[in-house]
Every structure is written in C-alpha cells, then in structure tokens.
Length: 123
Image (cartoon, rainbow, N blue to C red):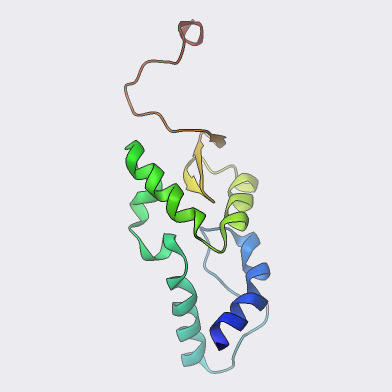
C-alpha cells in the first residue's frame, strides 16, 4: 500500500525525466537509505525498460520493436518518456511506445535492406 501511494504522489515528478534517466524524486521519500533503495527497486520493477533486456528497445527486427512498443503501453511513465524523447530528439529506439528514427517518430520501423516505399523517394 505504501509503495502505491508513494508512486501516485511521485509519478508526476518522475515523468518529465523520461525513460533514460534514473528515477529521483524532488523530495526524499524517506530518510532511511535502506528503505529508499528498496523503494527504488520496487519502482524499477514496474518499468518494462528496467525489467527486460535493454537491447529490445533498440532492436533491428520488426517483431522485437513491436514487442518493445507493446511493453511500453503498460508503463506508468509512458507519456513522460515520450515527451522526454521528443525534447531530446532521441536518434533511434523505442521511447514511450513510439519508434524513433533520426530523431523523429515513425509509424513503423522498416528492416535493413528493404527497398524504398516509392521510386520517387529514390530519385
């Protein structure tokens, strides 16, 4: 119960940091270092990017990218992660449930070596 209550109070503070930074509240949640470390571990367990292979969010294969996007949809920090990635113009990867390529959100990641969508784009 205490963790859920603390998360509700602190999610707004943590969200703007995005998914690539360590979660640190603006005000200490507890003065006890052991309790603070336990709360940090419990919080990290709620974030898919902290509990799954980090390479999944930077995968080349479309199926793995789609899996990372699906995991992001369950994350309590999805909106903040996406906002942070947009602010930083992340060069690539899955951030906040969206795929970034060259600092912009793309609808779907295309595999390497695939032809362009149209011949006009090649010209």
